[in-house]
Image 1 (tube, helix red, strand yellow):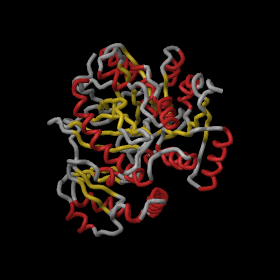
Image 2 (spheres, one colour):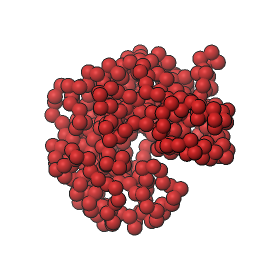
Image 3 (cartoon, helix red, strand yellow):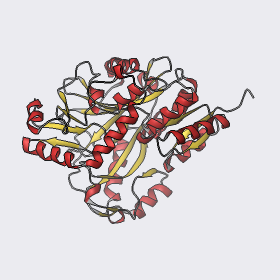
Length: 433
């Protein structure tokens, strides 16, 4: 039938996405797929299921879904990210080699290099040491002295489980890449310049590359931090950047993602995180080979755009989408400010002893605020759960016609949701009502 809905596969949706999926089903026939492994038998079974049900293409939005996105779409005959481009996206060292003018960085391999050989590479102290494969803030260290470095290297050399995980990932991500196209170095660690977060502002950029290799700009979000560098939230559109400054960002993205396109990045969204330094230069933080699912409601509330639906439409059609939040923002159309309020904890113990769940219920039931529960009230946090940024407990989406209205709501929520005041949450100067 001419008016039949396109049949699209949605990989591993999370509970907070349900309202968006319900809305999309008025225009798309959305099928839920739940791959668990990269096993060839499971991927073949899912692809066969898609073929028998008429599923045209699939898309995933979390980091764990990114490789499934490639494996299933390959079998369905859809243009997708090449294994080579994906490997570059999944390794923090390789992704940085594509920058035209990067700050200082160096590959680190504790199993192939001695402490002294690694120390001799370090051009700047202090510096950041990052595991190149881990995500969600794990394996990131601020190294001040050679002794700090030796301790981290010793921990890695003793952690055979982590070594096996990295080897397992790299082996799978590298399958199908011709030997002459493999990068010379795929290191487990990256040493790089330490960015002063008191002076630089971090942004999350969303874009996509069509099946023909064209880079398209989609949206931009600002990361807001407390004075102690703990994340406060993600703001769309940016407050510290005017739409008139987008030309330089476009040029930088076109340069960087043009190189990724040359490596075979096709028919998929991407999420870039970058700093804008005090002198205005742009420096890569990292790239994720997927759309960042958390920002769907930012774009929906602020601009009326559906990130999920646009991503599903792209993988099915391969061409340029008709409109984007980026275009609306650049052209000065009306918008709302939307903030993902990040609720984190740095103390151990039951989550229900940290957050006031009567107030959480009020926000959800009486105010209609969407909350993504990344931890449940009966979870018990341990020291092993802690990252440099603490533990994410919830994400809340709030929106306002003005920045001042939005800021006032964020401060109200943060003042009421914790049972005890949180240490170190000093607001930046511009975050005033």
